[in-house]
Amino acid sequence: MPLSRRLLCVLPLLMACAVQAQDYPNKPIRIFVPFPAGGGTDVVARKLAEHLRQDLGQPVVVENKPGASGNIGADQVARSTPDGYTLLVTAAPFAIAPAMFKSLTFDPVKDFTPVAQLATVPLLLVTRTESPLNSVADIVAASRKAPDSLSYASFGNGSPPHLVGESMKLLTGTRMVHVPYKGGQAALPDILSGQIGFAIMDVVSMTPLVKAGRLKALAITGPQRAPSLPEVPTLSQAGVPFDTVGWHAMFGPAGMPATVTDRLNAAVAKAMATPDMRALIVNGGSIPVEPATSAAQWGRQFRSDVETWGKVARDSGATID
Image (spheres, helix red, strand yellow):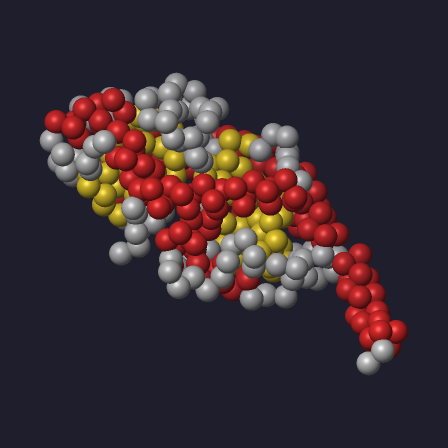
């Protein structure tokens, strides 16, 4: 077929896509959260959806699609039409997945369009208030005195807390026993009873327990202290040079029009700057993204995170059982 005729065939499709992108949004939007309802990512996504409904003028429905460390929900979004009506709000396990799952059905970099980073989400090292462990130095000393006698809890094999714990062992030359749970609440009874030495959990679910005096915070991951817990040192400040941190973020399927991506990015930035969203982030122990980043900036950061977490996984030797 001559080039001119091929262009005539393709041109209507391109024009239709352009018109559709310009009209965005004109129908309900679905946000998939690949974790159970009530978790930190879910809470942020549902509050964000309220603001997006007002800004975008369309219903924004949040659906939980948990399973396989977030991979089931992510896979569904990856297979969706890239028109901006099916989105994913997820967390750092999404960036770790390629290093932990041999049969992953999607590529987080190639099969998704980064839209916006919502917040930085550190992890918190906690123990019961009566524990003799009062610092990271105490954890290291106890582990060196009696290798494999100290256990730590995480919310799953291959999760960010698991990799932080394995990195701590690698960086300090110690040996500790990893005990995976299905979440912070599932691990709480064993932490409070002393059956578990300490836990590495998401700051969102642990901060209220620390503030209520039920748990003692020893350190927080990331390059800076959390505004809600200013007295808690970072892991690096506590003597373990580990700064990698988690996040909440929004993605769409690969191939979303730039106009749609930018519209969503602007709507998210506007929502995250409101007093109630900022309070939700800060009071939960997370850190706002200030200033807000563009979709392109977040995309570059995300690709870097995939590489960083992959290196952490390889260096630590952590695997999915």
